[in-house]
Image: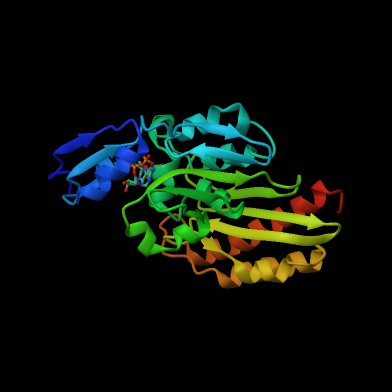
Length: 284
Ligand SMILES: Cc1cc2nc3c(=O)[nH]c(=O)nc-3n(C[C@H](O)[C@H](O)[C@H](O)COP(=O)(O)OP(=O)(O)OC[C@H]3O[C@@H](n4cnc5c(N)ncnc54)[C@H](O)[C@@H]3O)c2cc1C
């Protein structure tokens, strides 16, 4: 493999120019930090359209949402004051949990991360749990939920540029919980869980459960979500959902841990997160 056919390189100042280059030239690819495309791209890559100066490196906090431009690096997110505390602290927590080096974090971008859509990304799991919206440039006014984008292989194979993402401000203190298990604190997780949950009174109003490091793609536990919706979060329900998680997931081969171990850990992570939500609310 290797970029044996690469001959052209552009660094446009505008997204309109970037999308024109991509649409008019077969074998042209957008590039964020290049941490994946440069080592793993092959002879299909004839040209690179570098998005680093296209004006999409930005973190903006608006009244009820956060906008993150696609050329924002992971290190930008780790150091931005906007992600230092609740409700956006989960962004730092999930990036840190991936155990990447500072060097990789300082160049790899949000756009590259999303376009790759790897199932071992805690960061993507967090964004999917909170139901982030992807803004696509060059597709007429198409904004799409991250979860739908990750599961739409046709769209992902088309020429497109992710220009940014929007995250609606989580509604309450219990909303985003992240848990992961690693052998060593700074190493990539064996399994991670991002759980988003809001309550109306004592009843669960909305919930999304997304695991990473189980399969090639992220895994969402919709059956468990349905089991939780509209219910009061008590010990019996927590045990049921935890057992369902352990039963439902089907981990791919991973030399770091057996499928049986991961199944047990999936149940444990769900149980731990839901107990944490109750203890945050003062319910023991
Ligand atoms: C040693 C090592 C370890 C890694 N570990 C992990 C890991 O644990 N988890 C993980 O998720 N990844 C991992 N990666 C993969 C990758 O480096 C990261 O996911 C990184 O964040 C990709 O970002 P990038 O900006 O460097 O992407 P690039 O390499 O620039 O691009 C990646 C892909 O996305 C496309 N792309 C880039 N930007 C856009 C855009 N704005 N719109 C549309 N398409 C775009 C490119 O065409 C390319 O196909 C690892 C890589 C290495 C080398």
